[in-house]
Length: 224
Image (tube, rainbow, N blue to C red; front, side):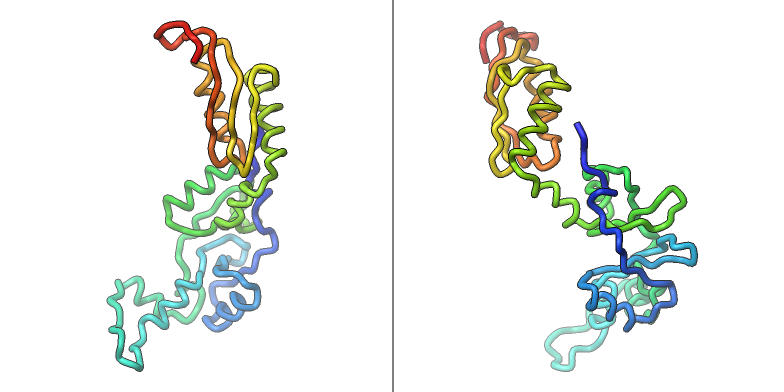
């Protein structure tokens, strides 16, 4: 089985800023390039942090509402420092949480979830910036065609990995949902097959209707 890597999914032409890039220049770059964040890099092109729209908006949120309808929100010290910042190094979220190009989608998605972030700068072995991968980039695996998913499951999962011929176990795919049918020798193989099919890029769900001829899980030896 071959999982798509971060290097395949990332955006390579990355808009970036330096530590001393002023607030208005960052806002202009975000608008002109239709992006919501930019990495902040040092002189060796290594990410030091990321400035997002949310970081910039703290400046507006920290100001009094001229209409008087909403109070000035309470900001922690670090939030107030950002609200008062004028350059990238004062505005950025740091340190930068980065990914490697050889990582798969699961590794990148878990790191985003742990850190509650929407994008990851991608760096090489010397920590130099190679690209950036977003949640939207990771979701592109779910745009795979159903026939491509079915062919991968049939050839890579069922045949090459499990040694099962198409006459033994079948896979039908519709809108990323996999439905398995057929029969295998041992009951213990069924959860393994379902788990491997579920880990195939682009699969949304797996429904199994696989029978077994021998129950090696402990109960009576009957068809499932």
